[in-house]
Image (cartoon, rainbow, N blue to C red):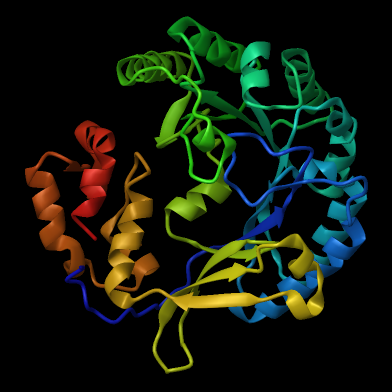
Length: 392
């Protein structure tokens, strides 16, 4: 139970992003616990576009005169939709909410040949960043992971993205795969780096409940080997100029994902689409005080598509939990946070966390920079759960 009990006060609202969920994919991967569903013979693109716009219209009061800093199309496999659908949707969003001059618009894409053919049209529709779900360049691993592409298609997709003008793209890559040896994991990483992506999401495979892998666990590397893979991979990424800025995110200098940064800095985001979540700051709630809410939308696509089945659930964050939620996010960033950022984004005085900060510093989990910012130490990054617990 948190001891923080200050009432939040917001003099300035945080930046605003938009997450749009497309719930269909070709088939469900055995490790995936996202709200994704195998597509049938025909996707209801127009009906889903109409549903997204209805959903957005209901959330417009939460915009509060802020332009969008970023848009992220996630899934599922959003690249199954046609570029014209994204063109119409982005036009509808732009009419309703202003875009910042440097808006980042990301689309998650599969490397399959079918999706590759659309890359140029995605670019013309206004998508300026791709996140390509590679996972591995090893054909045997791709089969184990249930992926629908092979290594050749993965490489072709990256080349195609570059050829049509995507100079800002992320590659999603997993490590700690079934029966994976360290040389195999590093070969995946070297192959990805050779394509010079601006951003890499490199993360360990975890077994989540309600997945096929949970029911039938594959033979994963032991803890010692997974640690060795991580340690060697970290060194390789640093050597090749990729800076770790978040637990599993690495980028070339200045090419961090704006959308991801907004999440970890405790910024606001609208969430539309089946099962989408949002986090929003209100300067004045209906009770007359400020606060932060979380939203979630109807999860089942069949419900979401029907106007009468499209539900929006709103849950205020208890003021006593805000500091812990802020720290749970901000401490994922290597750069940490500043006292000013804590106050702006949480609405709480910095004094609310000073005692816990002192304890974390005494334990060697946090450090102060010369500019006065607060960062997880190397030990703090290794024991992040223990660090966060001090603020919850």
